[in-house]
Structure formats: C-alpha cells, structure tokens
Image 1 (cartoon, rainbow, N blue to C red):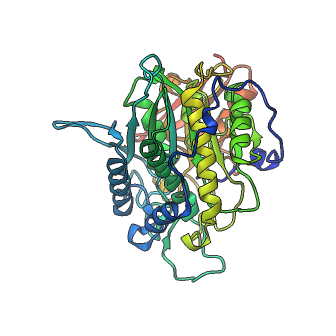
Image 2: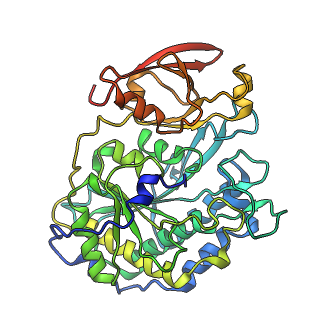
Image 3: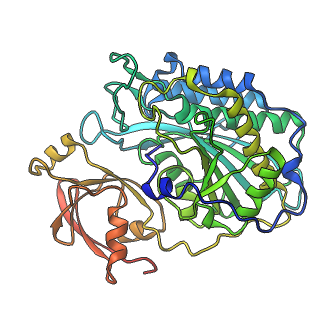
Length: 439
C-alpha cells in the first residue's frame, strides 16, 4: 500500500461512536466454520515465500500469485466472476497499466484482479452485492519497476526479494479464509458477496480502478465495499477503520462486530484518502472502508517477512472482518452513501521517475506528476486527463518540489476557478482546466 497519510496517523486514536444496528445479529453468527491460525499461516507463508518473488505487479511472481488465489477460490466453491472466455467466465480480470518507477520510460505492464462470487441466499436481496477486497501484489524484486521499495533495515543487505508478508499477503490470507468459512460453514448471506484480490495496488491502485472502470457486475448493484490492508503485525493494537464518513452505518456495523468478537476497533479517519483500494469505490459513491493496522515496521522493506506475522492475531482479525461482512450481507437495508461524489478529482498521480523526467527534457531537479489511473465520470476524466499524462506545471508554474499525489486535488480546491495544469502527452504539451469540486 502507499504510506498512510499524516492525517490518518494523527487521527488514529479517535473512538467509534455507536449508531443504528442491523435488523438481525448476523455479525454474531460466526462460529459455523471456525477460522484458526493453521490456514492463514499456510497462505501467508506460501505467498510471502521466495518462490513468489515478492509478487511484483506485472511480473511472473504476481501471475503465480493470481493462479494460487484462483485455485483457492475454485477449491472453496466460489463462482468465477472475471473476464469472459469461450468456455465461460474466468476468475481473472486482466488489465494493462503504466507502472510507478518504470524500468524504461513509457513501460506498460499487465496485471490481473482475481474475482470470485458467492451468490446471496435471499432471492429478494441477492441482486445487491457486497465486496470484500485486498490487494495481492507486493514490492517485487530488485530491478523491477519501483513500487517505493525501501532498503533493508536490520536484515541481510543483499536481499533482493521484498516478500511483502504483511503488505499484503496477510490480508489475502484473511480474505480467502473468510470465503472458505462462509461456504463450508453455511453462514447466511442474504446479499451476494464478491471476493476480489486486486493487482497493481502498489502502482497507484490500478487494479481497483480497473475494477470500477470495467466492472464485472453493474456498479449500481454494489452496496458496500470493505478493504483489508496490513492486518498481520502490530499485535498490541486493534484494527483501525478509515473512510468511515462514507456511510452513517459504519459506526453501528463496527460496534456490532466489536461486541461479537471482543475487539475495540477505532475509526482512524472519516475522510476518504486515496491510499489503497477502497478509494475508487468511495470516489464513485459506494460506501467503502478500509480495515488495517497503523505501523511502519518493515513496510516496503525486504524484512517484511512471514516469520514476523502474529498468526493468532491475524486469525482474530479475520474473524472480525467476517463479522463486518456478515452484517453488510444480512442487514435489512443496504448502506447509503453519506455525501455527494463530485468533490473528488478521481485520479491517482505518482511522482515521475528520473528517467521519465529525462525523456521530457526537464531540467535536473524538476518535479512532475504522472497520472497513473483515472476513474471514469469524475472531474479528471471529464477534464480530459488520461493515464500516462505527465503534469509538468500548475497554473503556469513548475510543479513544487514537495508535490505528491494529493497536490492536484489541493490546488484545484484552493481556487474558486479550479486550476490549469500543463500536461505532457505523446510528444506534445496541452493545458487542461481542472474544475473545483462540485463543478
């Protein structure tokens, strides 16, 4: 995942406030197929082994990862809900993307999401869908497109594989085990559930943006999304929930899951931060939260290894995630988005690499922002921005040296007239007007 914003870290102590509960104690009906340490450990140790080469998106290790998850979904009994083929639907949703920190300027790689469906058991509500998601890509190998890999710290200096155990094999293991426990345990789920692992999250959320851009099911059927991120470390803390402002329902859902599992999950921040895969859903007006831990131990370092996962805590957090999912699947009324969806620009920029700057003939020390993903229908898309565009100026000035992925959003919202940006694309420069929120 991208690093948690300062706002999220600063707000992590905020406590949940209880509100309306579901019509039935679905979150408490979690004992039919227990989730223990054995299976979550097996998944993490497999996915975070050297054989998977750090699961770098667009490379063989990530392709092998998707095949592993697909096999688990088949074993569990989920239905394929990815791309169509002559033989029918597959579990994979493939897409191409411009990587962060490419090997060579203009590089395009291929990744894939893995999508499995568990149909709802209530004919009156099965057309409504809840999504449980987690990204399966990791930091990959030394020499691959750079996903903000950090150097070794307290481990072997010559380790060339970033095994990415907590970020995010831990959450993939949890997602698989929630799906297994629901199918094998016969747990009631009135709404349909999509279990999705996303590729290329480390490359500016390209997998989840692809999911909402070319959805395998109509977006209007999606009632809520829960995203899991880094849930295997920091045993001394409970999970934190972010983006809880997307629905007034979240406080009650989390409070009920706390009561069912003995947790004390805190709402870290109500706002939607574009730092992981819940963001594209929330940007399009779908109630969405992320459940995760707030720590930086070994994050994006080769020392993020499977031996450092607390498997007892991971299994417990998995049971909490299942309680939240069951509540969403069984409550009488579907969640309602809490606010308008026109404020967000709907794009994910990354800092352009030095090699990309050289191709643009920008002076040494310059800053530019590459648009990696654009969400259809929102402000950036309507203004004409496209993936691969490189922002080289803002309102007639160079991009500030400290500008990051949120700089364009902040600049557009700071002016009543929005902002004009200079964009390099396909050997030419264009000027694009980004309107202020609501325009």
